[in-house]
Each structure stands twice: as C-alpha cells, then as structure tokens.
Image (cartoon, rainbow, N blue to C red; front, top):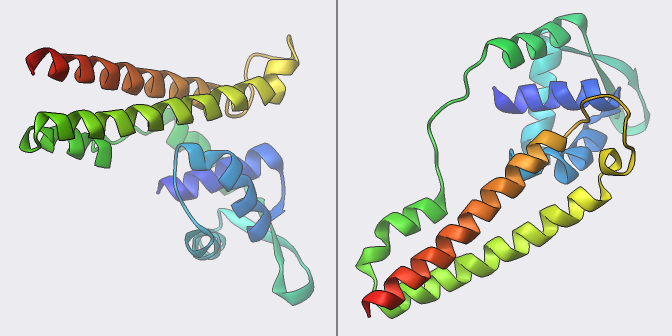
Length: 177
C-alpha cells in the first residue's frame, strides 16, 4: 500500500508524469524513506489506473503514458495520511546484526560497529548535503510546509541516533575488554 501512496504523493506534488519520470523522481526523493524500483512502479501504476486512482492523461511515443492523479486518488491519499497508523513492524539488517553481535568475538564486534559507524557518517553527510541543497532551505517564508522537508529532518535525526549508538557501543565493548 505504501508504494501506491508514495506514487499518489509524487503525482500530487509534481503534477502529471510518466512512469519513467516518477521512477527518476522516486530515486532522488522518496527512495530515502521507501524503496521501490522501476519493476515495481510500472505495475503499480497500471493497478492504480485500473482502480481509478490515476488516469492516463496522454500517450506518447513507444507507449509512454503520462499519469495524473484523479479526485479518487487525491481522496485516497488524504484518507491514508489522516487515518492510517503506520505499521510498527520493522525489518532492519542493521538491527539484526546488533541483536546477533554477542555471537562475535569482541574485536570482531568492534570491527562491525566501526563499519556501521562509517555507514552512518556517510549517510549523514549525504542527508546534510540534501538539506543544504533543498529548495525549501533556500527560500525562507514561503508557506509552512515543503515536500520532503519533514522526512529529511526525520532521516537526519535517525541517522544521528544510529551514529551515536555505534560510537557508544564501541566504547562499551572496549571498556569490557
């Protein structure tokens, strides 16, 4: 369901777009919080059209379709935003590694944590760069909300927490050696 909602949100924010355009926009925006590739996006757009959430506004060369959100799609997006409680289910490889870390020798655990720390540092630098270059950060006073700003802030805070956890865990294991 979340891919459908993400696509409805992109169409709302950026206007009519082809599947290719949506996939490219997805890669540089929503992909930071929800993963999906071209092979998932195109079939979902077809289902959404069949369900009346989007319409094909135009068809171009080689069958390129330009999708637009319908009133029903806008209502679905709004309903999901206002009424849906996000799932508490969480799948994370890094959390699984943290859970299983005591199975490693302490020095191996420190090496794993060092790799995680570098990952967090790299990701934080990327997100901070996104924030510096985000149009909303350069245009002060233009309304209260800009597409992606709050998700970007949430991502930065989560990565900072992960980085702090890795540093603290390394220190904890080193104290125990």
